[in-house]
Every structure is written in C-alpha cells, then in structure tokens.
Length: 206
Image (cartoon, rainbow, N blue to C red; front, side):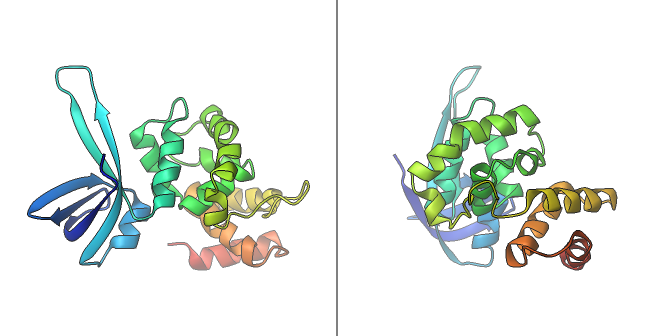
C-alpha cells in the first residue's frame, strides 16, 4: 500500500499531477484544493489513496493524491457514504476546502453541500447524517479548526448567510463560490447586516 509519493512535480493540471520519483512518473488524480496548494512548487509530497476498480472488460488501478492527510481522510469518509463515488468526492473537495466542508457537515448546512454540482438534497443530508459524528471522533474537525455549534446558535448565522447567497444567485453568481465568500465574511464579522455582506461579497467574488 502506498502511503505517499514524494518527488519532482513533472506535470500539473487542475485535475491531475504527475510526480516523478526514482525515474518513475506517477499520475495522481487531484482536487482543486490540492492543485492550489502545490501549484508553482518544484518538489511535492502527495498522500495517496489507491483505488482498484474491477468488473467490465478491464480492471483499472487509479491513484488519488492529496496535499494533506486531512484532505485524504475526508475524501475516504466521503466515498464511504452511499451515493458518493470517487469523482463526486473529488468534486466536493474541489468546490469546498476541507475546512469548509467539515464546517458544513458539523453544522448541518445541507444547502452549502447541495450547492456542489451533482449533489442533491437527499445526498447532502446523508453526508451530514453519516459523517457528522465521524469528523469529531476522528479528530479531523479539531485539526481543521472547524467552528462548532454553540447551543442552538451556529458559528455562522445560517439565515443571514442563506439570504445573502440567494441574493448573489439572483445577481447571476454561482451558489458555491458565493457561499464560500459569504461564510468568510460572516466568520470575520458575524453581526454584519445582509446588505453590507452582499456589497462586501461583490467586491471579493471573481
């Protein structure tokens, strides 16, 4: 079993990294989160998840690479959920950072998870139901500094966030990046009114 691959970054695209070590080039499927972390680096260390797909005419062996152990751990949790395959899990980790995804799971934010392409409401709720306790028990929530619930009040005001995301969507922006920026704004300034959040988000969104 391969734990990690360390070597020269020979090729890099937003979905694939080729790492050369000891004269062998390993092609690893990656998320946008990992792509962002290793972009511009000469030497990299990627934590590996190996996947063997059997059946059909040919068996296939695929490597997935992650910039951090936490991202790999979260990926493995995601693919353990019924209805979440390898590509869907990678899409989730490309749309949201591990910390954002853990935060959404911990706080029951099914709308943010549902904003990921290919994820329906039932699947988003299943992810929360299956993984909410796991991300706490494994310690990954603490490692990613996930904001926890305080009583019935969420770390981020969900009602205000939803209203702001809805307004941004009506203005023509995609829900996932809008939610990401709005969450960042609310985390820094939790008492900001909706109109101020939207104005701030419009300045930051690309």
